[in-house]
Length: 107
Image (cartoon, rainbow, N blue to C red; front, side, top):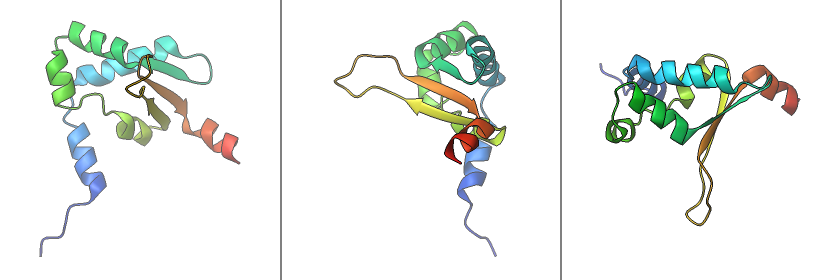
């Protein structure tokens, strides 16, 4: 008997199909912007780097290649994505922290 697919299976399968360039870019930007406790990665910089590596802006957004939070969380990161409201003027960004740091802050 076939059972319904679990959400995590869909997410895992979906993100596993991302091209290597997506993770190469985010890995490089995390290292570059690491301040000892977190890394703030601006979305527009990530998109520019993906374009430099051969992906089109249209494909990056159409295929949701910026939806990397779940995959990085599997590897020990707490990832937050922040974007401005329509009436605000600032760049969307991702914040990467080790999960242990978030656990200590809460406890």
